[in-house]
Length: 449
Image (cartoon, rainbow, N blue to C red; front, side, top):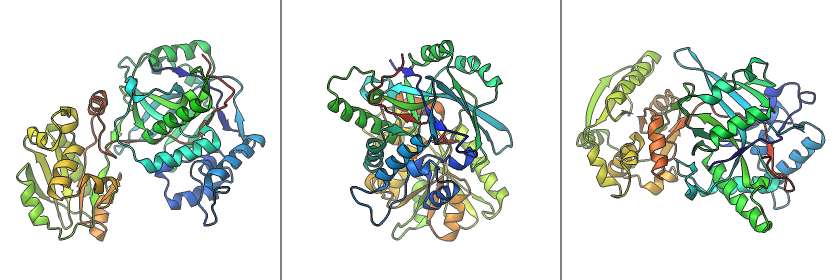
């Protein structure tokens, strides 16, 4: 069974850091070089210095960004910039964000520790593939600092929304942390020390499988770090903190839980021929060419709305390759996907929109191999719906494929089947803010019951 535990988190001390907005950061893997510089300028205590420190030309084994992160981490604790909570807690974490309609939505969840489980147990289910580079990077940081700075984002299923109801009274009081990120998302945190409420949260989640929404590299890093520490401590009992990892738990059945799409940009294809591609697409798709103005917000909005409508009726993508036309592609027959997968592959994986794009179009028609896709040799991912049009019009890419988001049920079905979606299949927005609470992995402590 999945098992969660309260912990004594490290949090920024408002007496030392009056402006908590200045020390927060998004997850390391969405921080560009420009944003990294900006975060460095905001505060000498910004969490980016720990999760994604700058690399220097003079870096060596004894002085590099991991060593500097560990040095800063220790110094901030000694200076009480980061202060440990006196009691084991779970942390209620709400994120309020606006939709394009103008409506505000609140995603609710809790932050706690969870016992690290091997994927073979079936209790923790990934849904996306990982790369070796990011895992090596995160393992070096974990070894150097002995801490989890960013929670892994996990989902559980509870159609009755029991935990959300239980937490309502706790949230009547002011949150201890309330900050607004660069996207205008409001982040609120309430520590909870009440043993009764903690026990109710444990009872609810302990019996449920967990689906990793975001943080696959960090979870696999936690597995690797746990195994290293078990070798170092052969008499381990399983209760040591290195057997646990910082995690955010959110109910996939809550109305504030939404998935957003990630769009694909194609570049560097030799002798790319749009007419030939459209002709080949017609062997598999109903292809509808629609005129619009790509330079106007109204035209792009109409493309998005049409794509959503077609997606409700079947498997639909939109393709833009310049000019004043967009192509809507609707798959004629799901069974065509059988030829691109092993016979043992579950239908849930074969008929995903991203599978249709990656296997049928990118590999079969554009001849971009799976290896080239993984290396992003001819492939780029963007999340903003406007970016694909800008990139094509500027000549930065040859063609863009616009996606609908996968349904929550599709994510669950693929994970339950023990399969993984192509990279960047899901985009859970908003991102969890790093710096709200940190878990230090004390080697001489055990997780509270």
